Length: 227
Image 1 (spheres, one colour):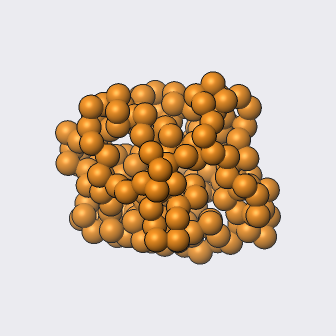
Image 2 (cartoon, one colour; image 1 turned 60 degrees about the horizontal axis):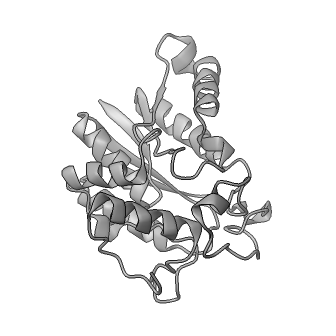
């Protein structure tokens, strides 16, 4: 059974891919080079694909810098040193306009071509919930779009979106990944890494990751410029 896995090179997508593999799926990773601040995560996604023995790995170039509107695709500062309370307020500037809608549409096309019944997506809403395109109602709505707007869907073979991490804490995600042998040292989570590839340790994503590893009682194997 084939499955498309959206693979960013990050912690959540790596654990999601490992879960898909545990579920008996042949992994077809999809990574989008969307003009993000650095290409390190693309390299990490490739390394993770090799480590997880993916059956295929498609990397698509789609430059969202032409649209901008995010600290990840425009010359905007990445927020640093924000508290958990701050992270839960509003939609952060690291939100990329409609990114997950775009990514899921591409994953849907790939899945339909592969006759894959599932798309695995590492969305999570518990640790910080500012991104509207990670919410359960959005995901249900997109699944309905997939049913209505594809040949697979209208011929009775709808493609389902699986989000195994959706309601898990970061600590539980890390514990699950550890139990599945996820190579955490290959993952990359930082929004604003140093030129030599170290995680900044101060952006929202780094803070959530560090807090999760501490809560899980697992050592984080990556290097940080500050932690």
